[in-house]
Image (cartoon, rainbow over all chains, first blue to last red; front, side):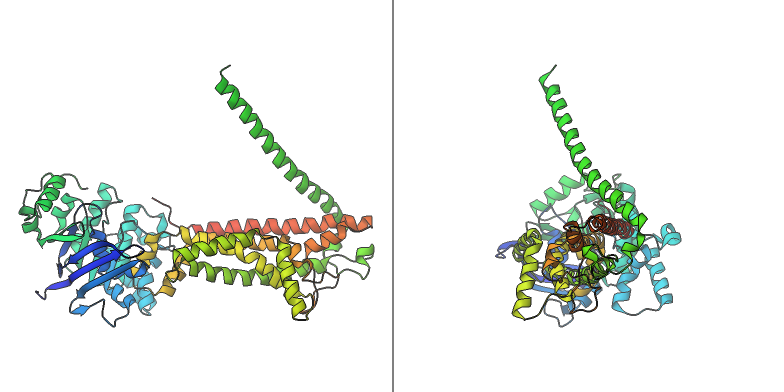
Length: 271
Length: 285
């Protein structure tokens, strides 16, 4: 497999439930190319989020979940690696579906991660906070009230703050789990703009069920169906000529105008 | 008139009546205490600030400073001990170290302990004291009161931590935190609930007489050391109210006044603290 992939999985299985007999992922082998935006698509409950969370070992937190198979970050098999899991999670950021503010000020929300991983000076921290907030286009909106509770921000702002918080620990990969699903169209658009700008520097893996969003953002697409990765490849190939019946139904059923070339921003609805 | 409206009218009248009854009794108790206790304290403010004379409970000179100090000396450290234990157990029950089934079982037991009469804790500690051939003392009462407070505070901490969203937990872990760092942050998110629990426990400890009845000693000496006897306001009120001397019985109102004020200040303080911390809490969108 090509070395340009930032992350790849090999025969990844995920079991959950008290006896760990329910299978959420079945022999999933996919690759996520570096410095590209990959979307994981598919119907609800088909393993999109499960796949995403297995990439930074978030399933380890659950008592009743078991992961089998391999996930490689670069050349590093993370489920067998000696690297402590917290260090791994620092390298692979995660933004959840629900916009979440830590119970502290805006500034401290962003500074929280860096302070845990090192002892940055006040000045370094100030710079880092500003840089991170600028990356998500939030700086101008909050620079005058950095000490206000983060919970006072709007939902859309909190979601961008979450993104800034993840970026502040300088990850290589950013995982996004339906990050726009709780947002209004305008806020979603701003988050999308941010993600597009970020993919120059980061590998982004994003779960979504919105076909228009896939067409606007995706370089690479993975199609999940009932725990199987049925399709994967460059967005143009998967969206225009899906090889499986399921993927064709899903893409055409949801997208409406999905026959247009990928990457075109032709659809009016922004989710 | 339509039957439905008659029904509605009757129920409404009943609800109003029961409200009047409940509030009326409350106002009566609080009003009597404030009025009678206030009278004693205005005429003779020194009762709250002087140590009792040797014959205080027999109508002698002095005040009940010993019980006020004793209350604090027993209940403050007890609250600290109970809080530390309750936070530790709450964090454990809500953490990834323990299974849900175990947590549920422990919570049922905590409810049982919550409902256990305080006198049972008192007798339990008394039994220990007899086994150890020791005697009633300030430290024994502290132990008994912390036993009484622990289930209350632990339940509050557990509920507060439970209300912290799972998303917050994942979000924090995803930043690369260790379990300890995550728990610390979750505790911070749960702080308003934890503070409420601590104050509840403190107020319960302050107002309880049964747990200290056999364990503190209950003399009229000023509290002087960990191994010496002490007493608390509820015990004092009991002693005063059952006294044969009218002047001592009057003082019971003053003691009740002080106790009531302390609890009131505590509750107000906890509301203030809880509001300060909940500024940072995210509402559900």
